[in-house]
Length: 506
Image 1 (tube, rainbow, N blue to C red):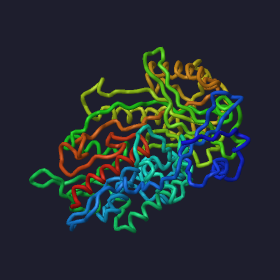
Image 2 (image 1 turned 90 degrees about the vertical axis):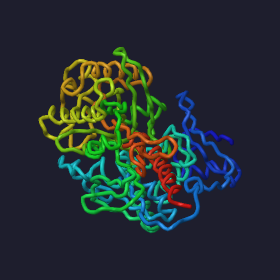
Image 3 (image 1 turned 135 degrees about the vertical axis):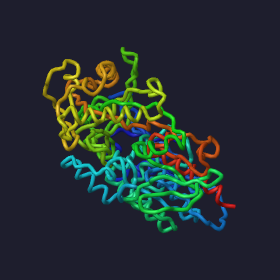
């Protein structure tokens, strides 16, 4: 492995950065494996490319390690078509197992229209929104692919995305990101490949439950439109699947899981860029807006940390239940919006307050309803500046909130506890020591961010991935409590699919 170092002027505006790297390497039999920015010294910013010999590894062999096929009486069923369900479906279809996929939401093309309608006039379709529909919540939180999970499957997942429209840069960037604008074609392309291989995808069809045989194994899946006989079900519902969690709480033995709640913070992208890099990234088409990741211990004894940072992005409406407000963040592929935003989250452990496995979910719902009420049931999101939060006084801001259909000033104490508000105040102050200007009084806080991860876990065997309560059920992905983003969810979906394939193939 070898590194090549450039300054912003050398690489920032060239037509093809990878060609410049290969030219400098003076070899054609290499590939870029990592790109990152060293910004420790603002007067000497370095864009670093790591290269290695191109070994032509077959990533598909990692995703599809089994061979052979038997007569299939009952096709496997996948519930949910987010990243876990999508890649599980792709793997099962590649084996020739003809999966049947059930998705309560709409196709991504139609879903895009529904999201636009919600942004325009706060009209929510509970089945088709930023949480539900083809591609899952990640489609409208811009396709961040960064994960701490180490897996060879990441190459397979990324290569499929590139095949259907994502930039090749996601294969080597240190913080890979597809962009909501490109994810539509990526999601549609994977769906069409599944169908071409013999799979079926049923949209606008809601999972109702499953049936068991005398031995306790799943034998059928029921929806609001049909019954599917099957002995293998990958349950890949998202973390917002309230109705599913309530209906399966006892039969699958759901447990509560820690998660986090908080707000979205927005700064001017240019200000964050200059604080971190010393220049405005808008000057360079090949240098992405600055990314950050922060965590501090506050004087309340609670931790505050950033999550799902969106350089040059927007805060988006992410409710899936009427008369609630939920926020999330996203960016387009160019990441060139006026603002940069991130979730500011405070850990919350529901087991400290109740033995009910759904207590955390109900707590999330309570915050989301409070947020709707505090702005007069208008559909506008509660919003304050950091200056207002500290001093409880109104002040003008140079940062314009990006949340649509709009925001309204509020008292955050009507949504969060005093301890949580104090955690935000002190945590932002401490983060300002790490990034100059992070604690600007003009920083905008929009509430609430509640869906960062699932509030429940569906127990499964560590080796087989099967439910420990019902044979043939494979809980998968973020909603089941085993992943925390697009990449880790897709990895988990592939692993579950391989367990299913192993049980079906001889």
